[in-house]
Amino acid sequence: MDKLRLVNMASDLILKQAFSDVTTSIDTYIYDDGGMGLYFTHYDDRYPRGSKTMYIFNFYSEEKSLSRLNEMREVMAGERLITDE
Image 1 (cartoon, rainbow, N blue to C red):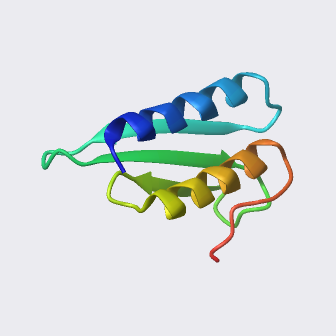
Image 2 (cartoon, rainbow, N blue to C red):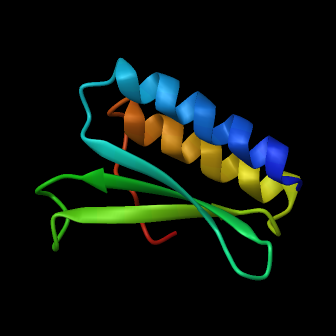
């Protein structure tokens, strides 16, 4: 998956974050090797450490990336927590 697609996913999440009541953070990182990552952290007392993070990296397949994005959207909507599935 190319970096532009990953940036578009991050933008989509940031827009949803602005209108969500769920406490989250969305970060993007560029690594020394040129790789890119999207980090989505959900803060909730139901997690043992108070938060949990999901990732999407540019080397993920389109299918895996879209699946993760949909999971992040569900968390943002308050429909689920992040699990270790």
